[in-house]
Length: 170
Image 1 (cartoon, one colour):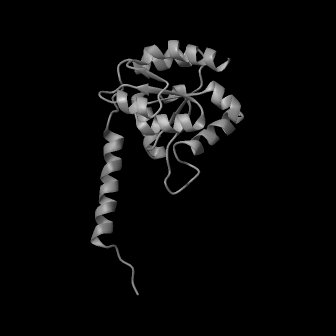
Image 2 (spheres, rainbow, N blue to C red):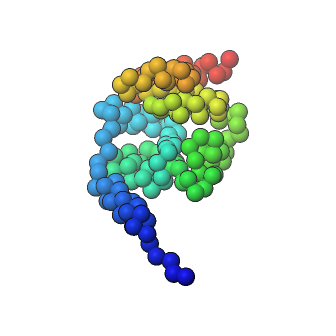
Image 3 (cartoon, rainbow, N blue to C red):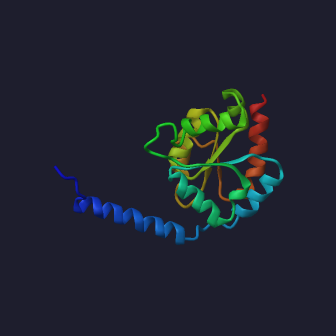
């Protein structure tokens, strides 16, 4: 009995190799408002964290290439081989542990900003503020998924986060 790579396995391996080359060579494009807004929130003392469905190494590569990784306390990607490392409640559990927060503190002090249905769903499931980033025709999808707020520009976040904080104190 002898194991050998099938043509399909070789093709998958080649695709994965080419993908990583593209990731390493690509330059992520940020919305023009994002770098300044991130800098302002970081300067104001907000703890910034990225959670993503991309693999951890892709998240780190993208953030580094974009020149914004220094602003983030955590950058969590998804490892589909590890059920404890997926976007949503598993990432939120890691965040609570790192920040030494109980679930109530996390709910009161957190917001998730995302542009997809899944982002809004996991925020609502966790009991945190869901802020939808408008990126074309996604407004209805974000609203139906439970977005508390919608923003076209990250510079709108300061007002929203202040309002959300005041509402959670009631």
